[in-house]
Length: 114
Image (cartoon, rainbow, N blue to C red; front, side, top):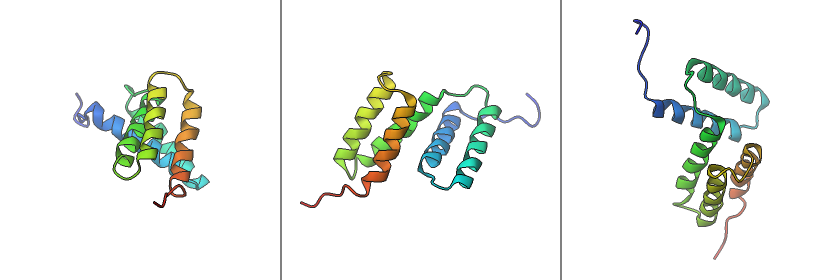
């Protein structure tokens, strides 16, 4: 190991990539999206033993699924079904990204009054 090398757990790198991917999905600004993609490229090139795009998407969906369980059971169910579909290769990655974005967009509008 060189003097400039540091040791980072793979779990940390995977979470970092997942958070960057989540920010990219939520971003509407084209300039900011370009910067985020540059950051993703840099992180991917820096850490050659990187996870696949599918694994990163699984991590993002799993995080959203856990977070939504506390406040919206319907949204949790949607994320759970999407997570299972991605995990078992029943859905295309691009379609899963679109669904994840639409869940996020419409979550604020689907508040139910009982």
